Length: 329
Image (cartoon, rainbow, N blue to C red):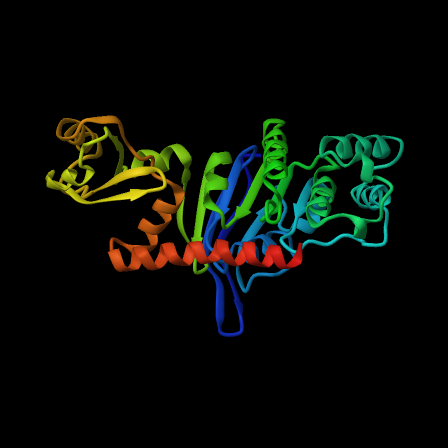
C-alpha cells in the first residue's frame, strides 16, 4: 500500500466556525510525518476525523486502504490529546484490558505488557492504581496502550505535553523505533522544533487549511537562511556589520550576534563571507532555517508586522500549553 492515509477536500465546521477547509493530504506508508501548526489550527480535528471520532461535513478519506478507521481499528494505535486512563484499575490490568480490545491474548499479552513497562521504566508501578501515578507516568502508560498491539499506523496527538526532558527524550526514541520497524507514524504537535528533530515529512496547517506539505529536505532546500550568526573577537564592534549592503539589522540573541539579511539584495553565503571580511570573528555561519521560520514566512506573506504577530501567536500557543500542563500536573 503506497499511502497509509489519503484525505481529499476535507471540510469540518462547528456551527459558524470552520475548523478544517479543503484539506488534501497523503501520508506515505512507513513514513514519520509531522502534522504541525499552532493551537486551534485544525490538527486535532483532522486526527479525530481520521479516527472516525468526528465525521466530516464533506470530502473523503481512507485509512489503511479502508473508508473508515473503524474498519482498520485493530491495525491503528492512537494516543489522543485528551489523556485518560481507568483511574481505579491497576496499571497491568488496564494495559491487559486495552490489549484484549485489540485482539491480544495471554500469555503473549502479559509478556508484552511486562516488556513495555520495563522499556518506559514503570515496572515498579505495575501493581499501582492508575490514579496513583503522576501525569507523566499516566502518559507513558497510554503510550504503551497505543503500541502494545504493534499497529501498522500510529497516530500521536501532542504526545510530549507534560513530560520532563528525560521522559520526553525517551518517548522520542521509542517513536523513532516504531518508525524504524516499518510502521507509519503521524505526530501531531504545535511545538515545531520537536517535529523538526524527528520527522521526515511535514504538513503545516493554519486556520484549518494546509499551508505546506513537503519533506524536511525539500523545505530546507527551498528556504534560504535569512540570518547569519557570528561571534566577534573581543574589541570588534558587531554593529559594524550594519554597513554591509544587504544587512538590514544586527542584534544580540541567545545564540550570539545575529545579522538579518535582505535576500533580495544578498545571498546567505555572500553575507557570511562579507561579515568575515569586515569583522574579525571566532565563527560565522548562516543559521539553518527552522520550521517556525518557514511557517511564519508562509502565513505572513512577507509582511514584517504580520511576521511579528505570527511569531507572538506561536509562542503564546506554547506558553498556554505549558501553563495548562502545570495546572493539571
